[in-house]
Amino acid sequence: MREIRSARFKRSYKKFTREIRVAFTKQMHFLLLDIRHPSLRAKKYDETTNVWQARVTNNARFTSKSRAISIISLTLKNTRINHA
Image (cartoon, rainbow, N blue to C red):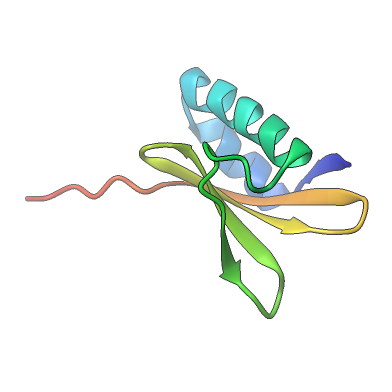
C-alpha cells in the first residue's frame, strides 16, 4: 500500500512544526502496516465515504481515506482546545 497526499493535506502539513511532521510520518508508517495499530487509535470518521481519523500526537489528528491499493491523506488538524 502507498500514501497519496491531497492538496488540502499538503497545505496544512506545511503549517505544523517539524516535531508533528516527524510524528505524522511515523504514524502513517503504522497505518500502512496495520490500521488497528494501538498508537493510532483509529476510528471511522465518516462511514458513508470511508474516511478514518487517527492520532498523530495528543493534540494532532489526521483523516485518511482507504482505497484498495492506497491511503489518501486528507487533513491534519490541531485538536488542542484553548480555554479562556
